[in-house]
Length: 302
Image (cartoon, rainbow, N blue to C red; front, top):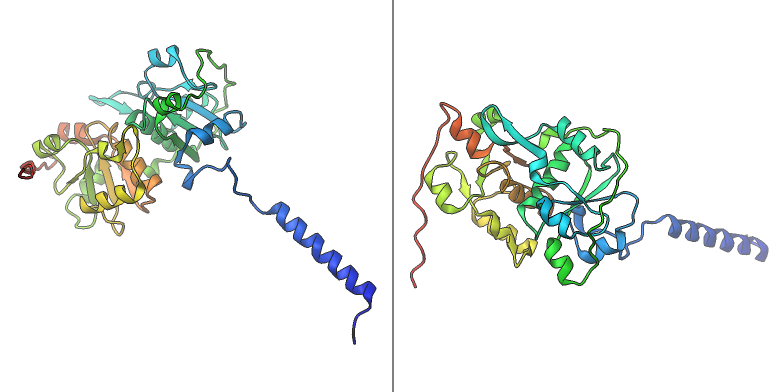
């Protein structure tokens, strides 16, 4: 039996309403959307989102540079604000609960999108970004190219200080991103864990955790901005990093390692990359820990 014209008309109207509602509810991809996994944002994205209520913008450069000029609405949080000496080991990053209190003082709360920039795409920015992640911030980005690229693109700067409302400490620390020294000891020689030492080759050769691979952290950037992810991943794999094995990243004090860790886990999406914050300083100061030396790689013939 065929339906009447009136019934067909009602069906068409109903279908049209369903399509309109579905389109309205579907997420849209526009200029305001941050790139992959929110790991890195461009100056264009930040410019468009400076006034977003959830964005908390942090300047990781030394305070004297921040006072001279900074991105509008930025607040100063430097690596020095996030660490102290502990157990005889200098430059030890605060535990997650203390980090959470520090970030709360600049307005970071659950649901905040923390955006960090340094002078360039440097390890000051990734150190503060990583600390925010350890504190429990769920959405953290680094501005590609940092303040240098921001100003090179003729974007606005200011000397004005933002008075941000304090946030009640609400972050739940994420210590799962870290590997404590006792676990490092167990993983050494397990035949499965890859240790990635991101110090300069000479430092790695002079002494490192047994079996550690070496790739200098500065290879992650070129001209002050992050290098293409495909290039960086290929170099990581050539250095001995496997996407099938857990990776522990370290340096001398955990500062430079933040660059390698942030790149490996958040830019490249490694499923099991973690940071050894105590790094070589803690390892070499702890009695009984095994160490290994290696001859630096000979330069290629000219």
